[in-house]
Image (cartoon, helix red, strand yellow):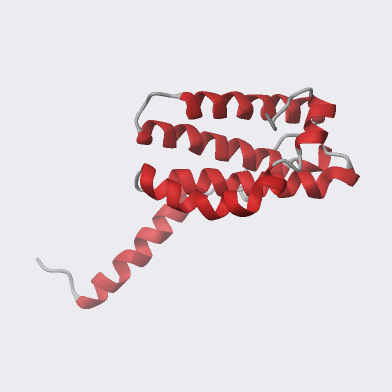
Length: 148
């Protein structure tokens, strides 16, 4: 039996409704965030270690991509908890987080290493100051030197 034209049009709508019902989180779809400075610093330490591991890995590009994807998730958690950063430094830290999220997004979405280099080139051309904007606050408050 072939589906009618009406049924073919309704099928995508029904599928979306089923997916929405299955993924409903009770109105809490926000990304997890860090709630205090100690947790924020622990997360930035984890990100720093994960970057070192991914950057120095001998694994395939695809293996590195999964590592960068997790780093991006952690960065988003920090961004959601940026209120724990001192108000005078918050904009600089947020800028650095956003820049680094763009970096990990480029690495994750690239088809291969060559495309990743192409995507990162303009980011690096404009971003060294932004990338390191959070370094003084992180060094002072978390004891981690991310600018090395």
